[in-house]
Length: 193
Image (cartoon, rainbow, N blue to C red; front, side, top):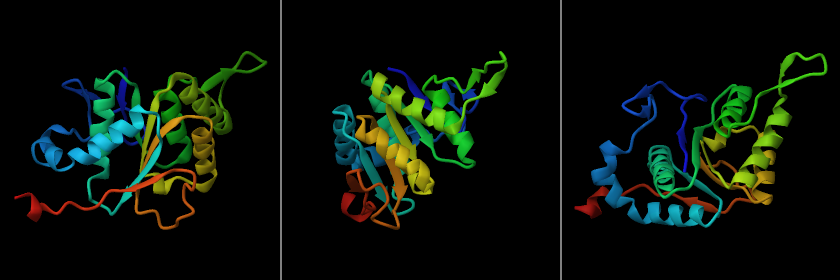
């Protein structure tokens, strides 16, 4: 499988074979890995079986760490998973997702000039590619995604795409109604000693 991690809407420069500015799991693996083993297995099982989820929780409980770790493990198991944090401006993030999925972001018009694809064209192509390839899309900071784009994401879900959304405590139950929800609770370090 192919493994792609992006940060800030675009790939960082490579350092030692890893994208720069993307948190690595190695530093926290020894302690946090054993404490979040159940959560990792749950997410790996769900995503491997093509089940989409909304993972949410308080700020700082380890959602991003867990998403990155699961993404890496999915890739190591031979699946293709793409981790992207949602960023502004919207157009840049849509373009980054399209590029991660090898979707052209430009096209040739009738006058043989290269022009940018519209956001609607890229969003339609993203959904089609996710369904066609079976790639897994992990979108972090999903609570920041504008409502109009949430509708596209829910359409991709309805059409069979596998998506893990990661959000800081969705303020409203109306966010991502069609996604099964799973709350990541803070760790109680006292009980682990």
